[in-house]
Length: 139
Image 1: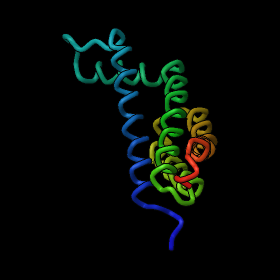
Image 2 (image 1 turned 135 degrees about the vertical axis):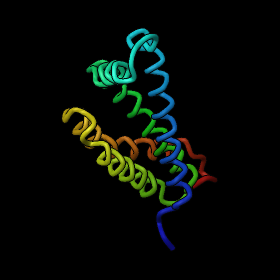
Image 3 (image 1 turned 120 degrees about the vertical axis):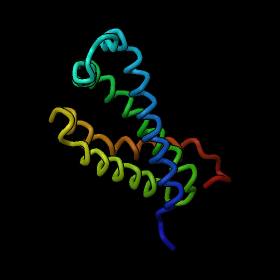
């Protein structure tokens, strides 16, 4: 019997990814005044988007929200897995780290290092929250 519940890990990771995309869209919407489309070429719009998403304030908020979404993913994974919650939360964190490496070149080094250093502990924190919230019958 394996300790990893693949379904729980996949759902937790996809939830995290979905929440990350959703928060990114909301953040871009909130910065809409900085990206003007009317009468501008696609290159100019792309440059505006790059300026917004590359700004320090955007990246810091992304880290805060991304930390929260990773914690939620770890928590949901642990709840769905029921057995070995920390091991399954760890799997979500490892998947998050590997996914982050795919986009390593698109972000500043400080952002990448912070995300890499915190994704696994944050997913484990989510699993810990799930364990603490579980009733004795769930364990």
